[in-house]
Image (cartoon, rainbow, N blue to C red):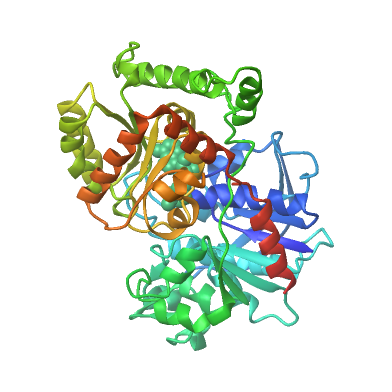
Amino acid sequence: MNILFAASEAFPLVKTGGLGDVAHALPIALKQLGDDVRLVLPAYRDVLAAMDLLTELGYWDLPGAGVTHRVRVLQAHYTSLDDGLEEYLYLIDVPALFDRAGNPYVHPDGYDWPDNAERFTVFSRAVAQMAKGIPGTDWKPDVVHCHDWQTGLVPAFLSMFHPRPKSVFTIHNLAYSGYFSHSDFTILNLPPEWWSPEFVEFYGGFSMLKAGLAFADQVTTVSPTYAREICTPQYGYRLEGALQHLGDRLNGILNGIDLDIWNPETDSHLVQQYSVTNNKVINNKKNDKHDQQWLSAKFANKQHLLSKAGLPSDDTSGKAPLLGFIGRLVEQKGLDLITSMLPELFASTDAVMIILGSGDSLYEAQLKLLADKYPSRLHVHIGYSEDLAHKVEAGCDLFIMPSRFEPCGLNQMYSLRYGTPPVVSFTGGLADTVTDTIAATLKDKTANGFVFKEFNAEALLLTIKRALNLYKKPEQWQQICETAMAQELGWENSAKKYQALYRD
Ligand code: ADP
């Protein structure tokens, strides 16, 4: 089948979160299964600059906010694109909307770009045009797969075409709904009949995400548990009614991870690579559980990470458990739980912690204060660093992810693959990927991490302490790490589920 992927970000060109990873890895997994998938992104300044060759295929004149834009569709080529992907990437070029520095959604001063409604309406109009046919090619999609609010209007525009390809809309995070005003709706020249609670109207304004729900042929989200959760008032952001209404048009398909990029056996960010398979070879020769390749490699990575972070890294203190956190510093990720339990954790255990992220200035300031207060126990790196992210996943002993809600979550899967058991709250994709360590799961060898159900700082602290007790028991600890590392986390299974959905 021909599948057109429309997204507002995709690794490695532009990424702010999990959507970027998915928009990179899922098309490749689908291609490997035989579908012809193509990706279309906005032509942001940094993306254009990364291209080796751009070919203009054609243009349309499309309405924006009270003006008409000349919208060019470009075929893009860049060297790191894999073989077979030569005709893979299209860019929608509208300099007035996308030729600007930095983050795709946010001004360098931290507020949303004021013309976001116009930017992503014009992008969505262009994607819908591509669905009719891409100038200069005879390629036409059978399915247009859209992602999050930035492309929510694509299924809506497609609904006006006959014949038209089918549309799939995937929710990566319901908390971001692309909510704009009635005057935006009017000036963007959107069809007046859409202004109804049945379609895009939402509490006095309009929601681009709701447009995706109302008009797509199928709606998916990124884990089975999140698919159930968002149909309830607690997680539904007032869209639970619309979501319940979808019935079996709503499905949860768990994200995978890119097994090449997140592979401790080949990861060039690490000072020593490791794997469970290597370990088994060593075990066959020598049945000594304590002399395992992955353990010593992991320890080397830990020492390197500690010294890079300026935390004590001599041999003795290197044995203190090292906890890691990576992510956006926002309420969703449970930063309030982390900041409130850290003093007690440092007072009652020998754990040290590394935090990598950026986000709300409140959390950034609180974390910096804590790092100043506990310089030998806490390192906080404010910013975005792929390199450090890999080092944290490999070098830590425990990965902390106490999310309030988590549509799927990628970091807990990376940490599983790197043999760093995650401590997670029981929600969304965390509940679907992490099996709590209790007597029964230790016995049947399914335990791969630690889960807490009551969402508060005390429960997080107790669960970390429960994990640290097991950390002192090498046999059980190694079993948990090895179960984690052996877990099936790739895209193949999920890609097959998307294929089945497209064919339905
Ligand atoms: P979300 O999409 O809600 O931000 P996910 O866990 O699904 O959360 O995905 C986050 C992705 O972004 C992961 O690939 C993670 O490693 C990455 N990431 C987030 N913050 C940082 C950071 N400060 N530095 C490096 N990578 C980061």
